[in-house]
Length: 330
Ligand code: GDP
Image (cartoon, rainbow, N blue to C red; front, side, top):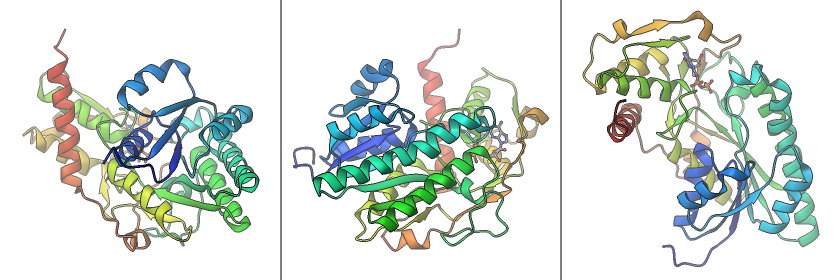
């Protein structure tokens, strides 16, 4: 497939993150021309080695001139905005930076895309990585594209503003869409997220390298999907003839406790409760109780998740076991 001519030029922000990495890899495998924006020059060598063929531009979502240069150099047909800290918990420590990077950053990109489209007459299709966090602590489950947005965290508020600006530019005439992404995981997810924190700890416990795991709220319900399925959704969303917003979710809710039980089962540990304790410091000031999405609209584009909850947990635990094998104990 790699010898086919590119059908389009894609520009991705956040290419070093979980989703950007999977999306760039997939687009490169399809033979598209792929450009990625990185903020930090020091990662250029490692990301080039991991994603051969990727064209890299150094720019910062907080710096308009750097973004304009990257857009001019890449001249994209498709722009995927995946950048910004994804940590809801950390957004309380850096609310201003969160608003600037995620909220205003999206406006900088939308404005630059619109200006370039007006100047060149060539269509740019824009996908914003929105988030289930825009719903806050919703009264109904599952949520759909019609559920009122009502964020309760600085992260959710910044994503909500970015989402609104996508709708504003769509009204103006830009092909702009928001993918409302529910939690999606993979072995590339950092351990700051509960899923990877659990699988890394369970693998370490199974190999005798750790004896304990502390967690916060174990009753929260989340809709956990597999990241490569979610980048597949992003590609389908921009292939659609008309721009819409889409829920990207499996429709299945599980608690953090379910995730734990499932992960310990992979390594054959039944008395998992003896390894886990609750640390009140890990509770959040505001935490949605049940985020689960209805992706009926997206399924009309032919999308469906390819990995079940059990398979996701097993894949992640196995990857963490493999990583431990490769790193001898000190
Ligand atoms: P989020 O839904 O995007 O915030 O993704 P996370 O994976 O960070 O959190 C998912 C849920 O797990 C939230 O309800 C957290 O409160 C809960 N949780 C419980 N213990 C922990 C923990 O130790 N770390 C994290 N990150 N989340 C935890």
